[in-house]
Amino acid sequence: MNSNEIRVRFAPSPTGPLHIGGVRTALYNYLFAKKNGGKFILRIEDTDQTRFVPGAEQYIIESFKWCGIEFDEGVTIGGNYGPYKQSERKALYKDYALQLINNGKAYYAFDTPEELSQVRSEYEAIKKTFVYNSVERKNLRNSLTLSENETQELIAKGTPYVIRFMMPENEVVLMNDLIRGKVEVNTSVLDDKILFKSDGMPTYHLANIVDDHLMNISHVIRGEEWLPSLPLHVLLYDAFKWEKPEFAHLPLLLKPDGNGKLSKRDGDRLGFPVFPLEWKDPKTGDVSMGYREQGYFPDAFINILAMLGWNPGTEQEIFTLDELTEQFSIERVNKSGAKFDPAKAAWYNHQFLITKSDKELADKFEPLLIEKGIMADPDFIQKVVGLVKERVNFVHELWNQSDFFFRRPEEYDQKAVKKRWKADSHEQINSVKRVIEGINDFTSENAEVTIKAWIEEQDLVLEKS
RNA sequence: GGUCCGUUCGUCUAGUCAGGUUAGGACGUCAGGUUUUCAUCCUGGUAACAGGGGUUCGAAUCCCCUACGGACUACCA
Image 1 (cartoon, rainbow, N blue to C red):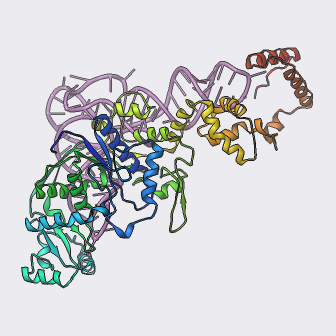
Image 2: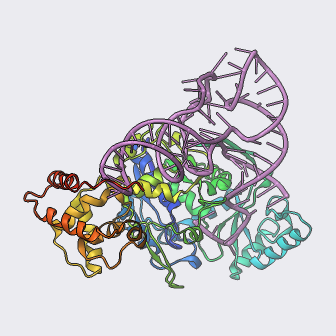
Image 3: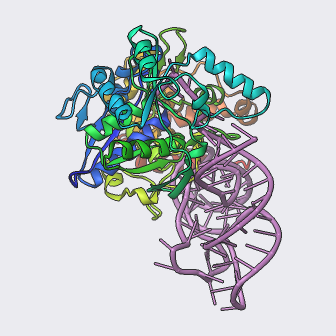
């Protein structure tokens, strides 16, 4: 890069709700930028018109707002490198694709998707892998096999075409990854990837490289699923004769049980959220739960995600965002995927909950009480919350621990009644009730002393259970 | 199938780069203690270096092979 400035970006596609793996990727980018005094950018990669989902972009923005992750530049915020939405940068990409054609690094291809899938299935049938590469492109319809005139004629006639990268024949691409170290791949196993689609839009590969370059991105920190396309990207930077950013590929978030990438289905199946915020699918109307709605605190949520794949090397486990920023380092990110553990997630939330003030918790609890038709004095709610917060992981669990403060019990624990309720219990309860009513200065200390004295007096001993 | 990446308790992980630890912590779980309940808290237990070969006095750590897992293999990102 032409400066030492650290600039990183998070570049989601607005194709649905943001997965927590995406949130973690963004978080690591954010921490890296803040730690190094750099800038964090939000770029929307909406080059696939067919997968656009209304509301997804807004969802992404709202998610980060809830988490407390702030961008320095990007959609809705602006900045000196805008626009930050690829659909608004559309005009720019074709020139770069053409530049590659002129340099002999790319070519026009006229194969239709149908033709290609036909060829692929033919290869499949004989158990061979079709690779659109230096060998195969000689047998297909493109500006390499057609004459210059034929090519121009086809284009002039409006024949749909794509622009493909001309993958070198037999070269070893050397790459470096900040997390994995050296990686090398031979180009002979790589495809002539499409850079520019017949609908006039660039593919991810082209748009991503062009924008990262134009936006002066210094470090590309993204999910491991991108590692296989790193050679292409590196070759693309070389083809443009651009200086490359540093790359870091983050390990994946895995299912809690079994193996594989964490998906929406796992959340539904195991009963925990996979998305930061609740999401209602605009098409099907299906609702997916969110961390926010399930009662997770944003700071707990961030802490959980941060520890899935990274640790500071000390025994500290609870962090504020500022502490994470201070201690984060990309070198300490793990190589292997992490299984998400809902039980530990709940524990983290508990850790944050008990540090919240009674007031804050009461404010969150009050709407739940109102929902149940209970109007209680805020000071009273606070006292109750203070009494029971140690025993819950989430605000909504407060009700089960404290309902008797707000209403008369509707039923008794049958087992306890059967076991404990004796002939004289009624009399004893009334007796202790009178004792409690008789306490003038009602504090926990006074109550304890008085009731213990009453126990002595009544000569009641604990019945071992 | 091919390419690439990975592999320490059930889970998150420390330790690997600079070879020598009773392989540490946390979650979970189990037991005990405190609290005349429960929860908190405290103490203790449980449980791992994927396998096999090397190199070395000595390997979780370095090298090789195997196995297993994952990602990618679209005119999706």
